[in-house]
Image (cartoon, rainbow, N blue to C red; front, side, top):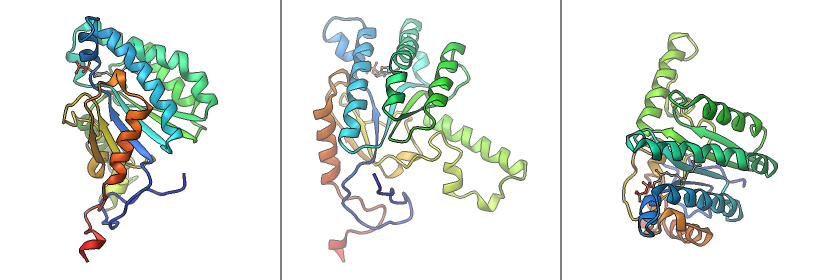
Length: 253
Ligand code: FPP
């Protein structure tokens, strides 16, 4: 993929893009999927991991180069302990089972979110996945785990203050580009398309900075049922839209 992302906030002008190159997904509806079948919620999450595998496989086939998924939010700690523990177990199992294949396939893994508070074994596994895939650049899989958009922005602000205090950054040089470098998505272009499944219409604290100009697509499909065709439909909706980045449509001139 050679297309550079349009600068998010600099009035890049209207364009219809062949993309998206970066898709972000709020994988919602695992619990409802399970409830509808009289199954425990944890089974919905297990099927959610299968949907994630399908999506990671389908995304590069559809020209996507960056995929960011919301797996566990800073607010999800409010769920019953057994469900929290099931979600941690699933992340662990996913990385343990898929890491060598993803590494072979040229996938670079990044885990976004707060590392403090993660159990030591998960934190180590996450570090290992990032380290072992850091030379890859064919496809980027960003897993937001223990992630909240406001918390990420706050952490970035602290890092920026720290850099200023240590004389590594002048206050007047702290612009949007410099600030973005302190976020968990440093080096990753902003998402072009953000999909939320399960018929909910909220951002739920996901990518608050990065999604400023993302096209939002909401689908009623519950996450465990998500597949390549759902992704294709979302991309078709994205392509039917006109992205103006704050400029006016050429037809208006
Ligand atoms: C939302 O469904 C989903 C989550 C809170 C977790 C998403 C997790 C996965 C897809 C599987 C885990 C994958 C990894 C890599 C750890 P919900 O439980 O809020 O569903 P509901 O709104 O129907 O109750």
